Figure (cartoon, rainbow, N blue to C red):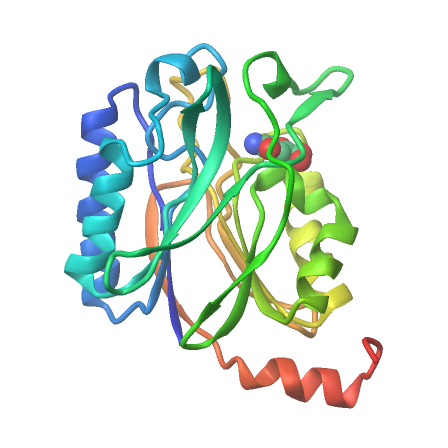
Length: 259
Ligand SMILES: NC(=O)CCC(=O)C(=O)O
């Protein structure tokens, strides 16, 4: 199975972000990607002040364009995440589409990113966003996959539940920062992969010093042995990664900690 990691630069223009995502996605699909993953908040700068203006209801322009991208390119698409408006609240939501462009799953970030690191990153998503209330998994032609968004990855029990529901791979669109990124990004992806003996896929926006929040980048794939299969740098890049999902059964047989 080939995964396309789209570590894109996000700017303060939704229309241009959508066109840019379409172009990068077409590039990944032309290189054989079966599943393409966009970053957290790929259609808006990652900053509370932008979320209300950029938020759309489910079925809005971004949703329709994502569905079309999946269908036109005949790929599974995890559409990063976007600010989603419902009943006067805003959620950080990721939509998943199959090769026909049908939505097969969605996840709204459960654990909102509220941190205050002394001398480092401060952020309070909960000033603007409301939390989702559940985690789950979805079937694909390759097996069962799980989904979380960024800060969700720090909650190990949620990923254990997805593994117990059959996940062989979990996807996490994310935007760590320059304080916690170097310290914890790779570590959490390797840890969740090793704990649960599955593949983890993380896709970040590229770093852009013109905005208030400096994403760490470093989109990553880790395997059931806890190794890094691939990790990008700070800059915009589309990377195709081939993985062998049989490794999940093989590692679980050799190291039967889940039984
Ligand atoms: N967007 C996020 O949830 C950021 C999470 C993060 O940086 C972390 O350290 O966790």
